[in-house]
Length: 72
Image 1 (tube, one colour):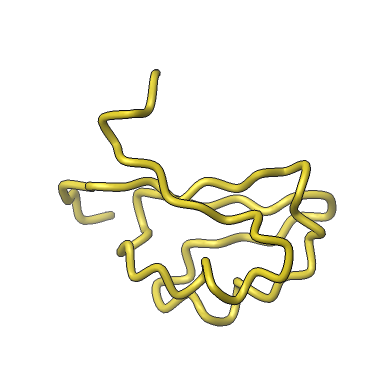
Image 2: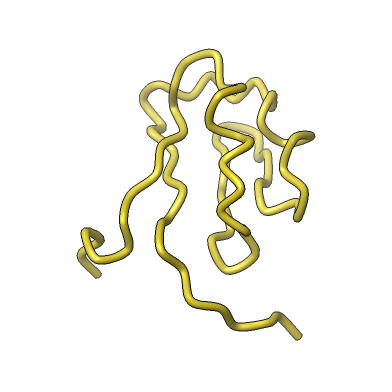
């Protein structure tokens, strides 16, 4: 069972920019990023907000968004 925690930011993927190269997958300590055939998916329930994925993305497709800015 996943541990519930209070998130401050969500890691988002700009799918128009993402080349689905997978560079971000091995640097994610909790394995919160899944590489699918045509897109990446970030599990923000698993993400620890370490931000290690953002600087390794060669196309700058990963970015953070404050939780309060997300409209559900």
